[in-house]
View (cartoon, rainbow, N blue to C red):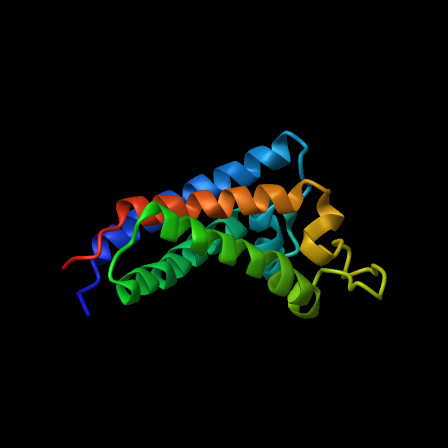
Length: 162
């Protein structure tokens, strides 16, 4: 197995995460979705809404780097990267986020109401629901697009050494 290029992993993982976050933020700003991943992540740590965006952005960036490491490991296991491998991984990644992760999020998020229990004084955030559809019918499309582009960036620019 070839050696991981740590610098490329960090640079392209950062770039891909910034692009993914920008796409999802633009989709929210243009009202295609109500979902903000940095806000959802940040409100796990703090109830202060302004601070939640900052904390969530940092957590999202770190998550993006960690997930990029998983992509890199898969590229190494396959023996090469490539934009199409990245796109496939991005599709699988989006499917995981939209189905499994969104389903369990209310269970560990201290400020999110559950699917079957309404909001209360501490749990005021709406749960995402299946495919995050509670945040808008276009939400799964934008999550998929952003994650596929994330994968394409990693697959296109990360090189598996011979």
